[in-house]
Length: 293
Ligand code: NAP
Image 1 (cartoon, rainbow, N blue to C red):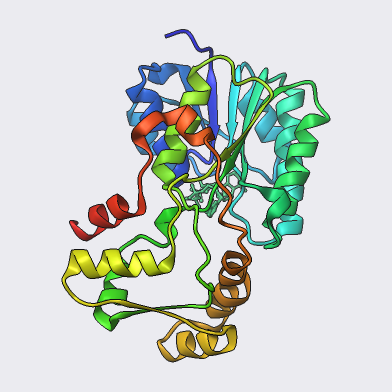
Image 2 (image 1 turned 30 degrees about the vertical axis):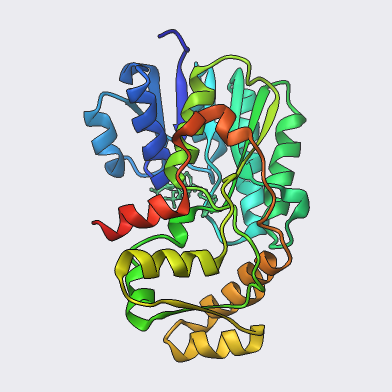
C-alpha cells in the first residue's frame, strides 16, 4: 500500500491507539507510521509494533517541527486540556509546526456540528479549523461526535444496581458514536484518496434517548432500570445525593444534559456511513459488548 509517511499525534491516547490498530489492519506498514508522543516511555508498545517514535509536545513548537519533518499525512488529534483558551494556543502551535515542516495533508479531529453547540468546546475546534485554513496544507476535518464510550462503559453496572438513570434531558436525542468507529473513519481517510479539503460530521445516524438506554439495560440485565427525566435543579440534587462530585454533576446538568435537552446532540449526518459503511455501532450493541465483559 502506497500512502506516504503518516504521523499520528496523541498516539499514546485511546483514539490514537485505535487509529494505529486500524491502519495496521488496513495493511499500512508499521515503518510508514510515525507516532508523535510527549512521553517516549509510554510509546514502548508502539515501538514494539515497529512504528517510528518521535518526541513532540504541543507546548514545544520546535519539537513538533522536527517530529513532522518528511511527513505526508498528519493526523492531528486534539489536545485533552480542559483549559479551552490554552488549548487554542496548543493547537495553533501544532498547526504552525505542520506548516513549517511542509506537511502535505493535515487531518484534524474537530467536533461535530460546532455551529449548533454551546458547550464552549466548539470555539477551540472552529479556531483550529480556521488556523489550518490560513495555511496551504490540504485538510480534512473529522468533526467527531461525542464518544458513546463516555456513557456506555462499566459505569452502567451502577445504573443497573440502582435501577435508575437520572438526567434532565427532556427526552432529547443523542447521536453519540464509539471511539472505535471514529478511529476507523480516521484510518479510512488516511489511507484513501478523495478526502482532500472535506469536512465530515461524524455522528451516529442511529439516534437514541435515555428512555431507550433504560429499556436496553432492563432488557439485557433482567432488572428494571427506569429513566427519571427531572428538572435540572432536581437532577443536580439527586446526582449529588448519589455520590457524583459537585463539579461533575454541574457539568453534566448545566452543560451536557442542557445541550441534549436543547437538541444539540440530535443532528444527524450520513458521513460516518460513507466512511465506514455498516460498521456503525448502535447503542444496543455497545451496551451488549460492555455487559458481556
Ligand atoms: P486521551 O486518551 O486522553 O489521549 C490524549 C492524547 O493527547 C494522549 O496521547 C496524550 O499524551 C496526548 N497529549 C496530551 N497533552 C499533550 C501535549 N502537550 N503534547 C502532545 N501530546 C499530548 O484522549 P482520546 O480519548 O484519545 O481523545 C482524543 C481527543 O479527543 C482528546 O484529546 C480530546 O481533545 C478529544 N475528546 C473528544 C471527546 C468526544 O466525546 N468526542 C471526549 C473527550 C476528548 P499522554 O499519553 O502522554 O497523556
